[in-house]
Length: 96
Image 1 (cartoon, rainbow, N blue to C red):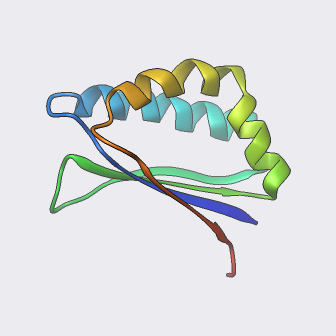
Image 2 (image 1 turned 45 degrees about the horizontal axis):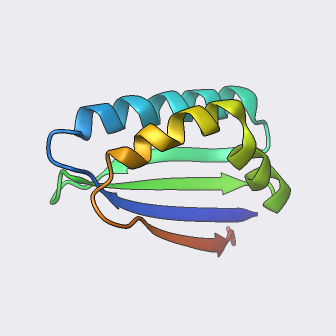
Image 3 (image 1 turned 90 degrees about the vertical axis):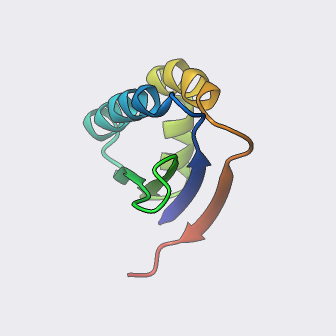
């Protein structure tokens, strides 16, 4: 399985917008992509402007499909507009 972990720092005052957009993306992903096993957004307790997005997909093809959905194309640009600096994006292989 293909896994990504993205760590994002959000611009001050944009946290609610980021959470709203990511919640919509998560809902649509789970409803429309059966090969997406997990798509979660979590917020740091110590740094409330820092979030982690965790996605787990059946395979690379499922991840590529996720990247090309109409709702992904619509929601990701405004999500990225809330991000301060660069996103830390890493890919992994699921073990257990």
